[in-house]
Image (cartoon, rainbow, N blue to C red; front, side, top):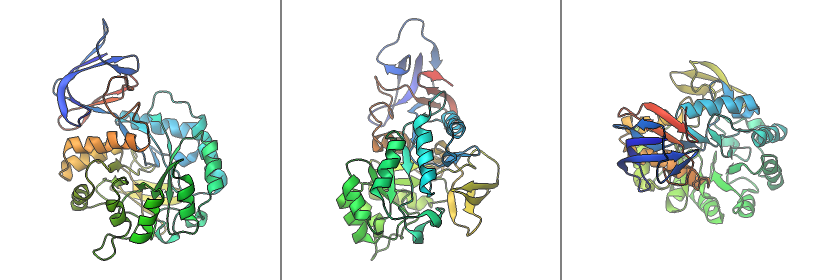
Length: 372
């Protein structure tokens, strides 16, 4: 396959007009005879996006723990330009988490987005900042439980969320820092506690600003600690509901575009009409793209896919397209260690490519070298 004359997002994170050559499922340096040709004139060619934090879509949840759920979500994501996925668990009972991990381990990818990891969001969180997590199943950090779940998953777990102020959290971070990415999340931690956790080996922040103390001039909290640690990545939900556009712009000034990862945090209502759904076993009401828990009105994830989040930051938040692509495709793949195969349009990498028109509408998705 040849994609001719496209505006290609290159390894320097800028667009240049050139051709892309694909052989079987890989990007290559030159074309083979009799290749299919796609005219990319006037189109942007960007790497397929990687969502490292979402819970569900099209009526399914990763925590359903079934092949049908993963496959349905993967197909929806691929059609929307998200070609690699790292779905998130919720705070649930241990037995159910083990079954979810096992289901992911047994999943065989067919024609949807590639399952490349698991984001373990809970149960090692703070009850006081539980958000849409189920407080009944929140527990102290447990190294043995995590390792058992990792084994069940076939080593798919890439990130583990943890509230560093909870009993045993610092020991958990110190012990596992070389095995998995530790992400501060759903936490009441002050600056000193968060900074200590980051020094001990945590290196990631789950949905920055959400489910943590606000950034203040005297109490900078998790946000200030993360900003002060140059190797710490941060997630941003840019659905237009979780974070004000001004805060998004300010965050890019604080952290720079090397450390920010756009995520959707989407739940099962994504791609579905308004109505009542569930998240982590709790009833959720979705109205006008806003998802809230029925029981207390807490925001319960988003109803927006990652490609729509990318469009939103460009169209409504004054973030350059090059920056948005970097944070939704490049940084995300690097963060979970899959950038050897994904995250850029580079010879030798898997041919996951999205063609967008000038309005950022999808014209074509190439998944593993095939147009879908």
